Image (tube, rainbow, N blue to C red; front, side):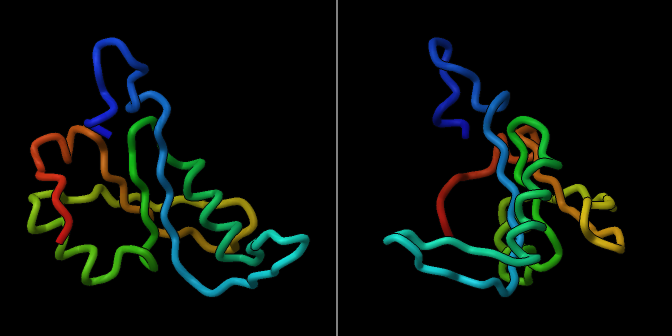
Amino acid sequence: MRGLNTAVAADPVRFLKIGIHAGPCIAVNANGKLDYFGTTINTASRVEHECRGGQIVLTDDALDDAAREFLAERGIVPEMTQVHLRGLSAPIALYRIAPEASASAPIAAA
């Protein structure tokens, strides 16, 4: 996100939102296109809608031990919130990573 942020271009903090969820889904290949269906897909879409500009929001299912370690090594501590997502009976925990939280963290992959 930082790489896109220039004085002459649109500020990605205002338009880039990333929601991440993991789980099983149904994959269908129809008319030469692969499409996905199921509760996991619906949840992922709703998680993205919980993002504010520039944030990455993850569910517990996506924030596994490897992801937690990756973030911790970079000094990033996601902010945890509980939300009710449409279509789900129970609230779920979401973990927000704001641009400010990762502004000084290196981008290099583990």
